[in-house]
Image (tube, rainbow, N blue to C red; front, side, top):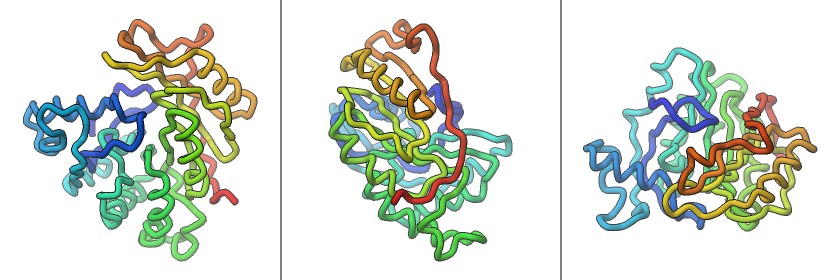
Length: 267
């Protein structure tokens, strides 16, 4: 477990490392820079995931069974961001390992687990089978329409194209909380239905190659959340000077969080 500086979580848990570019939202991925840095520091689980001289993941994905017990050993209630350095539903992550990760989450009801993916179609495909396989009372054959109450499932959305491609699959996936991470927000999202969505995070890209985020893109989404009663979390303006730009929107911070209120599969 690593304590996290990400504003909307408390700690990170990374049983998978390595990834592959999924869309333009990945182009300046912070996890690439962090992976390179950790590999240079000699952290073995991050070695060999970025080719020398390159600035993107090389497609190699590693699973780390020895990291599975981290939440189990943490007794105090904690909000975990699962796989901040990878994607649990990457095509190279075996289904049986995903099952092991969910078994740990089921075993730790004192924690909340936030699972964020750019691959919601694979999540939709494998999750019902994963839930069916868990040896828990009440799951069994009904697992396709229920969810673990302490697991929040989300998808990353950077523009209208990503919204159209990813949100429908998320809405069909069993989850106690479904959320959207609109970070980095790279364009306006004018068609955004929040029916079935419990939480929206918005943030600009940061770092030396940060692409701009316009204020009207943010306020449009914020107003939609306010009007529909969906908690809204504004993470940052981003930019080259992330700290200087801060996270104030219209004179205040927006730190709203969802309440877990178990949802069935959308119909």
